[in-house]
Length: 470
Ligand SMILES: *Cc1c(COP(=O)(O)O)cnc(C)c1O
Image (cartoon, rainbow, N blue to C red; front, side):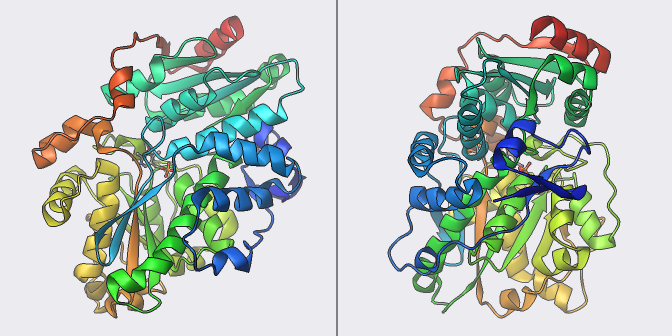
């Protein structure tokens, strides 16, 4: 596969170059594939239950396109995914795709582990370490820290907004030693991201260090996330006719979104043949994308703090990729969008628990509520001319092409559960009155000492620190 740039489509680079650069240092653009080869019919039409690792390997092979020999790639996939995603049925028409079975209990483990191993592979003959800079709104930092910890030839600096992530998230990314360290920045996630982006285009800094990124702007974070979309869509395609009694239902995937990396991965999976009819982009009060779909005007803004803080992004980086892949009209055909304020998120967790018995985290809750509302009337209202005011929480007044599948009851939904509810235990407890049980791997990290380094939201200070400490 050849990769190009969202800002200059004459650019053509290999996976190795795209991975090690992170973003194009010349244009500031993001890498995307130039084409999307279809997965073989043998896999797309298979009647045996799909295997996550087999799908991962077959898709990765297309992305890598000979740059990593099959044997090495098999080993990378096996090392990345000792865990898999799991499909939990909530009712006959709805599935929760649990993406939290990895070491840090969030979906970002899928991307970060693949990225770390591919980077390490491509860097294996280089004597100089590759310095990874990551801005995180919560879960990226821990997933990247965990995925890169003790990987030779790689060195990681994580920036996070002080006071804007949960105490557990903070522990998960600030307790590493050795090749992984965290800076707590006095600012927002967008400030952290700006510091990182400024460093990447700083010629002087780049002449001193080999820099690379690791958040969702890196293409090797996005590509592996497409594995679980393919896996889940194929698995649901097989079982949904039995569960729902709908013959050949259209499959709608509901994605709780912040930076829109996860949703972009879904778009890639769909282009490669995943049987997905449409997407729902679900956000919290950071509703830049829903507003764009409603009005046609893309207006990035400062992020606001919400109960689903890993989605607190006002200027989603992957908007640029979505725009390079689709026109606004195509996006409007393909996506419904939906947003909730904090009261809505609390109610969503409560309603999900009451109606299905499932304890959902505040991110997944945005997705669950979106799906529940869409199929229980919001889409029909919209079709009947009683759409929601886009300034109010709820379904964005935009009719996707698949709206009739919803109102004719010919669709099933897959809601991505992006984090384990215990990562947001207090928020969940307040909403539903039940404390989610804590997986061992989370409990352990709470007792480790914190090594975070304080940092002002000031590029000169940040640069000076890098020069003195890398
Ligand atoms: C990062 C994250 C999101 C948002 O994913 P994007 O790819 O940034 O849209 C949603 N939920 C959780 C729990 C996350 O950690």
